[in-house]
Length: 433
Image 1: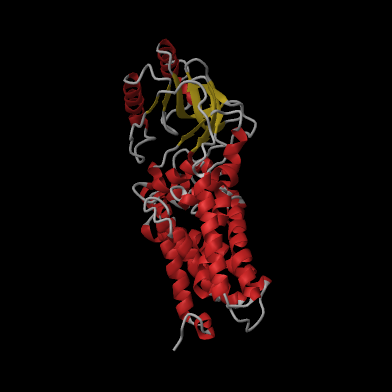
Image 2: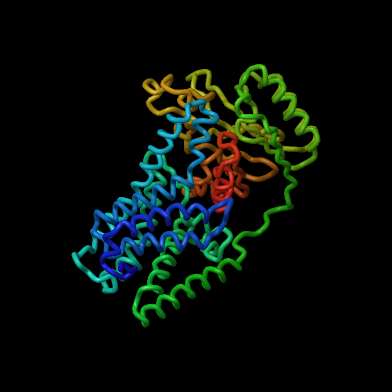
């Protein structure tokens, strides 16, 4: 009979199934479920089935883990492709599945590399070699591969372990180490958990002690107030027009949208700051600059209110257009989105791909990227670091506006993803920023 500590287990299909199941459970650690202990248990199960495995087996189990993890965790990609990209079900499943299979390569390659580094055939799982692999190589490798995933092919740092801990004691590490530091602490916690289960008694006690120190210290750090108020509190209003995504860009809808946002805004005059979402105005800036926007600017100034509104901006000299936020009120300026979403903000290889399927022809999917040296906008008396949509999941980019900025603003249109997992997951990452 096979058991969890026999060599037969590590070469059998039970370990493969366990890896797939662990990956499937991991997204439940994130919003909207918030079962944050699963961010420790799921990697712990993966680390466990990697111990004693050959590099080839570790690759396979890492890939199965990734298929479960991303297959559940980013299932919302299907919603964007099928529901709003008007792509047939078969092709939407194929495209989503291809993306999931690609992302699953990250834990697969990690498993291969980590086991290959210290691999020795027929090594018992309780040796110092395997302990070093478990406590050092696996957690450090996990964090390294999260970082690689954040920049390769423009980056996709979704489901990073650290984000799942925003309401857990490990969140106390965030001001010092950021999300990758928390990911490392979470992965190390998973490794320590495996030690507490399978190691010899003296190692178990040391692992328990290290686990308690890590979590206790993090909880203490969470009691420290790292920021202080600057000036008087701001009174801010967030305006949400709730225009359905499938009609948002239709010409006959434009006037209704503009009137709706104007009416909702007029109810909030007198606030320090009024915010509209990404792309709230479905018309290029230059078409409204001397009419609608000029009138809105005058009203805002008359009531002592500053505004930030999302709209596309066309550069008539270059014919490039930008996904932008515009400040109105006491001053006027623009922020152009820098980190564009592939197939959302722009289509890679568009000369080849456009026209093949509906998803490659989404409205306003030809944006250009803004430069990285844009001046900060000043609204409500504060220098403001602005990010649009998923720019705020890249902490290394948001931090460029600090410490000059005393206010951070993210404007997002997540209507592309309906009532899927994407909006609450994105909000969780925004909170981490």
